[in-house]
Image (tube, rainbow over all chains, first blue to last red):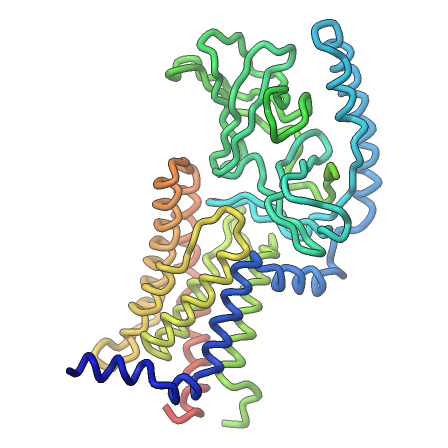
Length: 246
Length: 168
């Protein structure tokens, strides 16, 4: 009986009317959750605009980009003998946008960036983000003025990669540290520290032949296939500007 | 005591918003060797201790939902924050007094460990490994516990003043 009375009291229309501000608050929380914090991030972007990184690094980025392009060209020249030239060249001619990094959370369970450009600038879900040196990650969600990037080091990140010269295919798995783990698919792989890691042509998420990083250490005893730790080419902790493939 | 400019709900709302911005900005000067304290623990603990289990659980729910929205990875902090709010709210009664500020440090240490533990459990269920993050969690728990006696006892005073004014 007591339970029934309580239930009736809970469903009482009058108490509902009295507590409507709490219902509104609950609704608002739900909206924020479903919008992936769009309002909060946009407000943060608006308030933190005076503190966004200056343009000096933007210049430096352009120079670094020039350098990276030169590296990439020499890389591609070496591969032209083995691969069909078209696919590798096409990805270089994409439409790149430069965006500022306004928030960087690279500790622990998630590894992500917030960019100061969003859907208004033409960014979309899944777009590839690179920094000076190489690939950083992909865009996981966008708001009108910001975009959230899941880095290659995030535990949820899985990217198909290959060694330079198409010597070994593997999966680059983020582990929440600054160095993701490369799990090779084949048992017999000739891999040494210092080998360059590129995005694989088999990957559907990334364009082929973007520079990812360099093999740091190799564990050839790992089962079922060798593993390696990869040092990313783009220094996540130092980058204030990134490029996004639109 | 002079007139307080903010009611406690206004103060809670504004401090919660500041907490979200803090977790977004994560400035280097508030980190120790790349590790930042668990700000949400430092925020929720004093509120729950002063206002009781229900208010603590509701605040934990609200801030948990907001924090989840800022994380793209799909992990949730809501259940553990609600439980922490309920647990810490028990200290509002005189049966379990907060004897010393060291108790706050211990509560914050356990809260931070539980929060990170819930993330680890969720990653484990999803079949993803983040062993290295454990090291960081331990460091974060220690850092949080170190700051808690300082920050939380001030915040406890802050919330107590407001709740007294509102006739508690």
